[in-house]
Length: 514
Ligand code: MN
Ligand code: MN
Picture 1: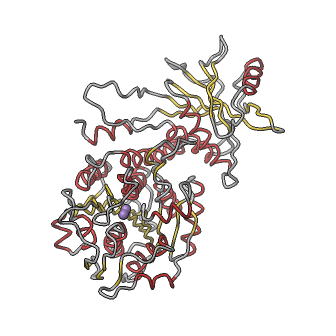
Picture 2: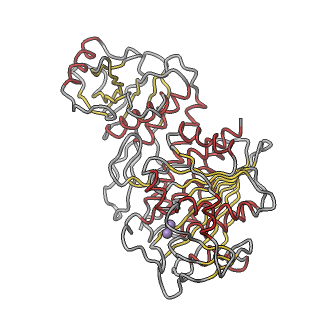
Picture 3: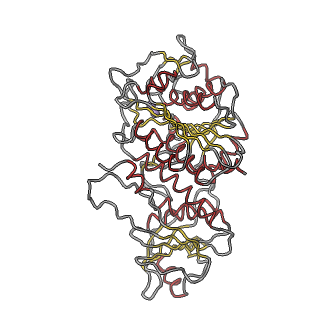
């Protein structure tokens, strides 16, 4: 059995990325070499866009002609066209620069176009991106799109199986006169790497990735970056009174864990951010067993994957901001030792909770972790979780929900998430709905009526934020729908775990860093 770290290392094998500002086309690669060219509509007809003059007139004409024969709905897709004899390249990847989404600015469109191109260009040795760029941000977006679109989950295979055809791919981005430099390349690679890590963690099966093995992975990866890692196992959680994590995890042979990864910059920290992630490695619902839709329920640790990915990225970029990531890990399954509906448990801050529904478990483990996080008096707390099916019903699979106790933080996060192409929509913390969480037998119940289920879950968390000695600026991201792509790949997003949220958290840390 390959170890988790081996699988993660394979998924982390990245192509080399170089910036190409000259006309010489760089070094000739040994193997299939593709040139990525943009396509845009002009007067309703597709035309090739060649800002760097990489095509000779005859080739440009041939490509323009081949566009006519492409699928009618060519927007948002990328296609491969064989290069004519005598060309420097073996093939061209034509990728659509137009996007029907009015929220997508040029940077977002380029990231998507590069992602579609990389996804379409299988079995290549090198790809050169000759897309129109005007800024360093757009160059970073192309690199991110290329590395994210080129990602695929390596899977678990028998020893010796020739499963991976992953080869060294070289990505050259033609930058023209933009001010992009090596620091931009590094920033883009680190951002893409973090999303790829989160995707791999999400796609790992729950019999291999469970709380203690997830904690070990975090310890290894964070340890390699020199970060301080502290793991509370079930004994420590019980002794210290983390009743949410213990209650949710007590039905499983895999005991719960709370992992804290702390990045303290060498330079004076401009602020202290705490990222708290829901890490249910499998959610069967517990005694309130889910009657359907149990497939993909290993994705319920996507929030924990995002916060781990984000803190690693902040450390790799040496951002002058302190980031503490908290991963609340448990498996929620039914058994004779599981917590029951009607149980009353005591969370880390002493609040008693009536467990009305064991399938509303994420907020129990998150509340424990949020209390532990706020006790360190961070300036900002952001929690991220595949928290409610109501989020998916309300906003679908492409837009996450954002709730916050601070308008400026909400505004910043929404903008940063849009730029990262991890869109969010702000939802209200409507106080009147909190009445539904009143309990006759405990301080609060873990579930209210069905209407507004996304909001009452957030109100439950806010109860714990607002009781902190120093109430931080706080935001809550419910990523239930966008965390996993069940339908078909698009842009830079593959099937399976999307890794959504991690680059938004990284962008917040970069924003706070100034
Ligand atoms: Mn659940
Ligand atoms: Mn869940």
